[in-house]
Image (cartoon, rainbow, N blue to C red; front, side):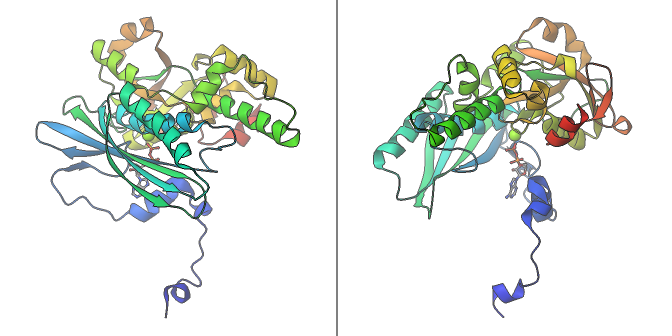
Length: 352
Ligand code: ADP
Ligand code: MG
């Protein structure tokens, strides 16, 4: 019996589990056997004991047609972004990224010059974040471009932050602003559709530089890690915001066995993003909660740091940690309480 016959009746669709369900399903029996493996699957990066410090390792894949559309994504920006999104996972552990390893699968549609552009962006990000490109792998792909980057980093043992350390009554804090990258993507998709229908119409991207940058060439949240260090703050838990702040809050909740409450009126949204959301007739809060790709940090921290955080415009206190039994909640401006959901886009829209 060959493998196809053996699996004839096993046709569970991946969508039925979802990304996180699939990871849980595939890895539920994985055990860590080596003493040096401190933390495996389930956080933003794996943690390896190197004696004096912890080594961090994480990997993110960007696939053409899923994560990027080359009709409007400059390859140099794409190179930069693929490095930045990886470094973001090292930041989420309160660590410093040090090395990257780059894997490329390239279809024959790409020229040397195109891949060179991608590499200009990769090198620029390496330079900006003082990360060394130390290896990789290059292969062909049947169609499209796939970029897989592994990042290695370092953190002092007493400064590491996991998703699992949130304590009841902690503050819930996010960096920067939320929802902009999603709105940047909506704008690019809209202009791309218009252009495809009528190539004579030039894209109208004016006044939206900020959201476009957030989508096309995001920064890794390294500066916030540096500020936290200066402020002598070590969060109790942390995660980077790659899938929307709702989804990330739920990860912290699950890993820390606590409830998280987020207040709508506290969520930081950039004013150009706000204007654009109005233009698209989307609730900007929904973009912040479920949009994704912001590459900000979401963390919990003891209330003893309240004064320091309140004074610093880099950080916004958006909620607090409760007992697990209180669940995860979103308090709207009118004080109504809603369960916090991941990818609750449609649910939230129907609640408006
Ligand atoms: P992030 O969004 O921070 O990059 P992911 O959501 O991609 O993290 O992954 C969640 C966790 O699952 C991480 O600890 C990651 O290392 C692990 N993981 C993801 N895909 C796989 C896989 N195919 N096999 C084993 N572990 C995986
Ligand atoms: Mg992450």
